[in-house]
Image (cartoon, rainbow over all chains, first blue to last red; front, side):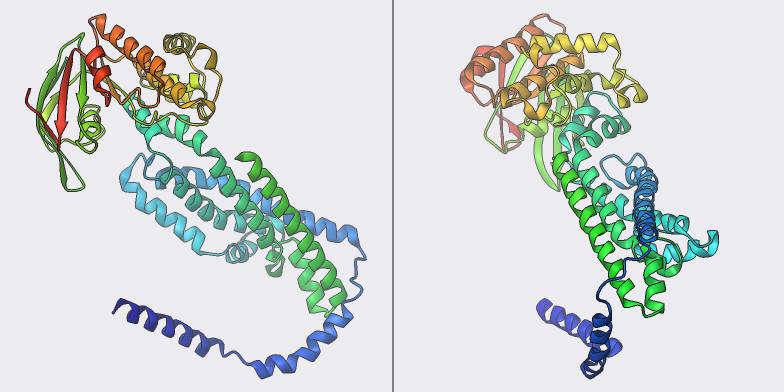
Length: 248
Length: 209
């Protein structure tokens, strides 16, 4: 019976998705010549004005780095309220989890859109957007790390007359540091990727250049920007992986 | 020193301890024996205040617990782990910033020396051997200065020489007359040698005699 209900739910999900998306292979087929013409026109990639592109790339890294750092500062107090072993006020546990879910549920892109309206165009709006969304992600990951940590050292603190706050600060956080730092690096790496498209809403970074190039159908420029984005993401991925291995 | 009267404990709806009653006098070493699952660890945890009591009462002074699996913080040094035993006496910020008072630090070093770990103070807990971890856990319990010492299989991971050294230390602590030791031991010969009295727990109840 449960299996049947599961199959029915899956069928509804797929059926509903097909109904609203309306995949149309003939349309894709008809568009292929246009795509191939653009691709042909993209070679060789146009790296003219490289300093400008690199400046935009630096903006992207800056948005991700400062956004993740601000997110970490926002996430820390909420995490301590939202992790059962250290939560000092039980009644605040569920509201703290709800705040994390709400922040995580709204994409950084959407937050950036709102901040562009509030503080104007540029990377500052992007950083704020990234920070709010990432605070939810970091808080969620961190609270799960703390909730799955070995409770025995924490009990040792409590039986020694220490407080929950001491247990968190002296024992739990240092012990969970590699996992906490690993989660933070993962979010930073994700944010490098996310920051590349923030420019589409005027929030700075390489996305801004990308949007300009697509609007002008300048595909040689688009290819150059995509190459820089891929190099940036791969470099962030390697650096984050290296640092995470060092933390073990 | 310790008086347990009509103690019952239920965990996840299952009655783990039933109507337990016994007393431990100052200076006494009492060993608890019994098969796995008899409720020995739960009894110690109830006395330490880590599990709620369903019925009965426990009259106990402040106690220190040596956990079965050491319960050391892996990334802290042996010395810092011993200082965890003093957290009840140190303020939040001093402990969070690891600004340990000099007197507490000196006492922690002395505790490490008493368990034979004087050369290991700066070594991280996850780089100590199983036996060294167990001794560091005993040192942390000593650091609590508690009149009642509870030890859950404190020699389980020790070789015979180290096991004898730790039990002799616990025995010596009790012999001063101001402390009592209640410990779980699986080795009857060690219990006979180091304990003044032995209690047997089976299926959550104390066996008579």
